[in-house]
Length: 130
Figure 1 (cartoon, rainbow, N blue to C red):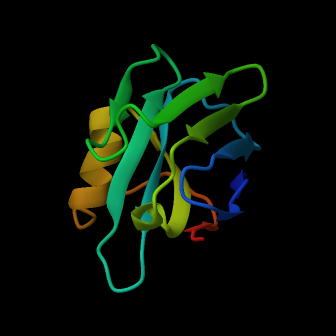
Figure 2 (figure 1 turned 30 degrees about the horizontal axis):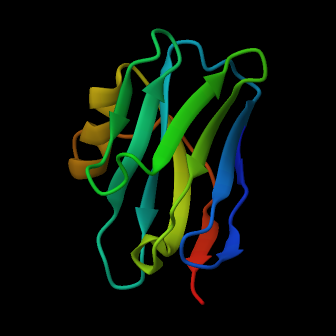
Figure 3 (figure 1 turned 120 degrees about the horizontal axis):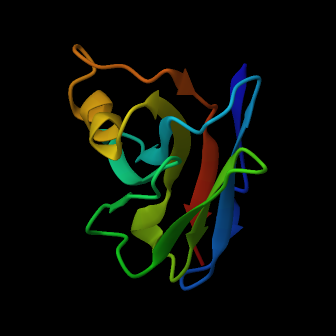
């Protein structure tokens, strides 16, 4: 039972990457799946998440209009299309899953002493640099 994140890499400013988060060993139908990131010396910050049951979405203000999250329930996978990447997007990106709505995904990020992710994937490095 795991989440497998992939798709990170090195890209120039203005470039694009697509991250994937694939679940194995369980189905994501009742979960909110998303991404948070952490840059060196900085706090974790939520990026985006999606409800696999009703498709409701969340985007952090700093990625709105540039990133798009999508789901493929048949493949048990969530994607994060990242366009117009900026150097400040450089971070390790983690995918995580929580059984519940997107609000619970965010709660687990900001209040880990009260809420926790059901599954956490390994990070994938995204580096935006010329």
